Length: 264
Image (cartoon, rainbow, N blue to C red; front, side):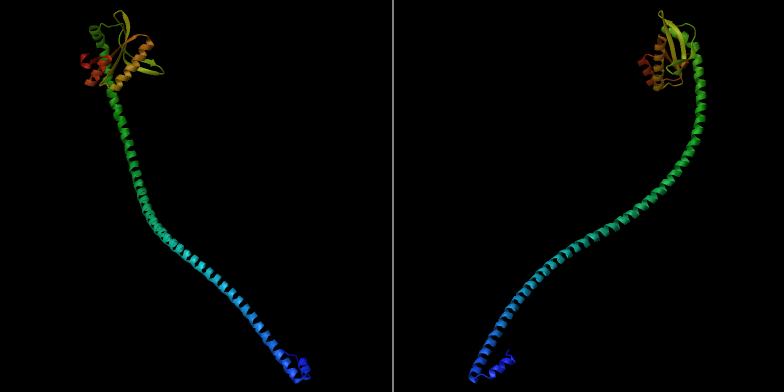
């Protein structure tokens, strides 16, 4: 741009020279405009380059974002599938719990009925036990009556039978006696002192309607303790109304003499 003051100065210059100056000024302006244009163009190119780089970065970031979104979508799909399975499992569990609760209620009801039945049975058992006690008392009375009768018969008949069959002489008489065995007082149905082949012995006997193996074992155990305590040999005798074959074999094996009631 040419200032007003410069134009005034040019007016006083020779027209040819003024034309030359004007041409020179135009050339300078032309070059200045071209220089500015190239500089702006380069700046524009740089700006475009930076814009493209920014766009490329944004595109790359967009791509990564889309990949992350795809991964998240895939994970969400997997999560939804698992969630659906969990919901289905929960529904089944709730159904099973409902059935279990129903079963428990039925069992509780059955338990209640069972307890009621047990209470009734317990009550009936109480009545039955009382009746059984009365029966046992009656049987015990009968058994004692029979046992005492058998013992009394034994006291009279055994001295003669023992002497005839085994050469045993009763010193005084046979009796029923309680003997201390440790801390217990044991009843011996048949007790007596006797002599055999010049030696003093004890006669220890048991009277039963029908002796069992358990009763024989208990009698033998106490008889051995009594003989040891008295310091004498014991001659064991069992008297009964009935001996089973197995009991007869057992008595023979143990060397215990036995008599049937009809022998007395």
